[in-house]
Image 1 (spheres, rainbow, N blue to C red):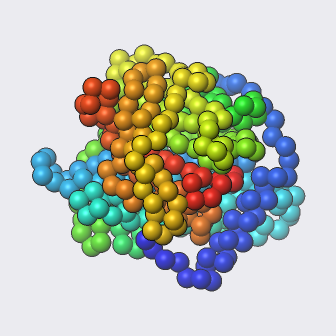
Image 2 (image 1 turned 45 degrees about the vertical axis):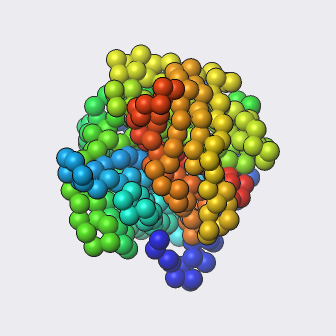
Length: 361
């Protein structure tokens, strides 16, 4: 993992602290149901407190016997309420963060990096018209049904294109996704599963031409977490038959589910949205991080209305330390999906937050 100079880390912590202030300035209200409009809603929503664009996937080099990789890129936008009334052009009214990581399956290692800056001054920007995000030398943009990402880092890099193969998937109630017991804990949320991906990955001086499948999530909210929530467990899985599975739960400090949800869309396009109580995460084998001493379940039994699945990490150590940007320590990595008959039916990403420390957004 790339290590940042101490002076830069301190500066980023100041900015991250400003972002934290935003969470307590004004109480959030329940979000209204509304029709999402594209391409506009692929763009930024600066009036909302929190937003992220998130692409994960699996890619391989060569037809058989080639290298297998997982990849993740996330851009976060945070509105700083405490600075909105400031007239100075130097006021940090909007912050942009980004994380990127590659899981080298054969090498059994994770490479990760991060960025942070205030929006403006040509350093960071997020268009409101369509998905067009740039943070220094990292970028993600959309044109029609194609997405392009370029994220060079210290000892790895991603230069990938993603092509839509299916219609957009509106999560929750036509794009309004509940995330807690109170109606105000909700987000506007859509996914773009089964993206056909191609491009190149750079891993410690080696270049790999790759192809694979990816998953895009875009979510924006005024309030995501209930005060009792410490984190979440989430999966986004591309099945080999073209189906798409989303499942998540929000946890309290005792590990109990405060809320759960998700969806299953068949290869033919039939969508079933899960109701509260229909998703159950049961932890299996665990792994303890030598860096943070946090313990994560790296194998799960996930019960959904679609099937009872096993979700299994391809390698244990896929923990990300983002204390120099968003402030969180979390586990996010490539995992395989196994059905109730023991058959591997897909792959995707598992994300677990709140295990090293309670998550605050």
